[in-house]
Length: 310
Image (cartoon, rainbow, N blue to C red; front, top):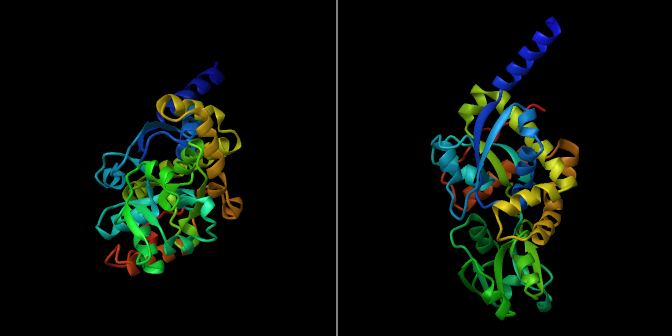
């Protein structure tokens, strides 16, 4: 009888301990969030006493502002956005880095025979979203005087119809769509040029991290397990996400999951764990953003991320 009562009490305590939190994405459900949906689907969040509501985003979703203003507990952003937020006085910090290699790239036609990202800046037209930090970085490094730079319109029409047209892309998105349309996409990652911010990072506030370190630790552990599940077998989470995002078919989900895998699981993560971060990379990124005048003052890197106990 005592054993039964104790079991009931333990179960009740466990149930009451679940923290209800909101996690806001910066885009629609796609493989870049696969580990998050896997953690929800297979009970990993619940295992770590988390009751997580995942809120999809879209183009321009102001995730770091939502975190800083207390509208969401956690969100997806990029490392350069964290520096921008901190430089503007916002309380934003990082606990998990999904992409160890930034998936942002420049897509060209393979038939051009370009050998490196530098070759893109010698001739033709390049479509990019103006004002982004990596665009400023590329302009400083290669110059735009030999090419025509136009605003990225989000589509593939110009690329498909013009062999000398290049455009920004995510390795998990536009190249797959272009190939499906019968084109010959070749991608050069921005990281090849020396700009490699952690991407799809999970952010929260320093206040929450200090006041509830157990919650942050549980989120980190759940994300690690969720991503391990997704990297090993993405099919189940892909099926779930495809129902939320019917614009992407399951074959594309599978192709995207395969394309992003080496950007998520690297030699670094094999040694330190999925989602772990290197302080030196934060330091280097901060200096790059300062040099580019993306931020106007030095931001201490210990404010930009928290080291979660594993």
